[in-house]
Image (cartoon, rainbow, N blue to C red; front, side, top):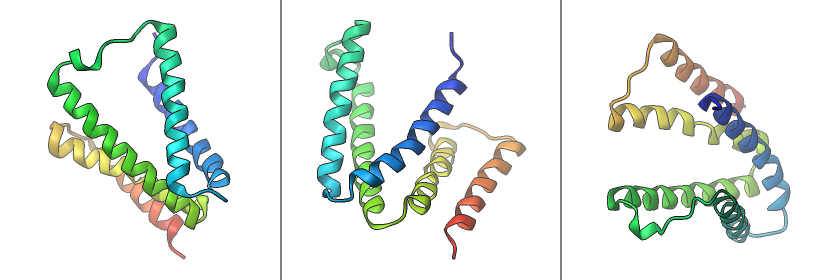
Length: 140
């Protein structure tokens, strides 16, 4: 079984690649239309994966609590994508992407506040360095 860290690195790599591909893709297209096209492609792509792996379940039979949080997650994902594509359309990918990666810091802080997770000294140092790094990159 693959370790979660492999998937986390894959996520980071593909997110980085997304910034470059999206920057080129939104050049002559509205950011909202670009987000819509991206969403349609993701739906078809994931539909194929779910079908191939035989993982389909009726979403309305999923535990209501889980379903509510998945819907809320989808809404926040959509808002993130809309903001991200608009930012890419207006600014350089080399600056938009690092600011977007502050999502990592927000996720850590929110996991502490709402999930009761705890960090050790090295994890706090990492959060500080990520935050400092983003500000170093974006300051002129």
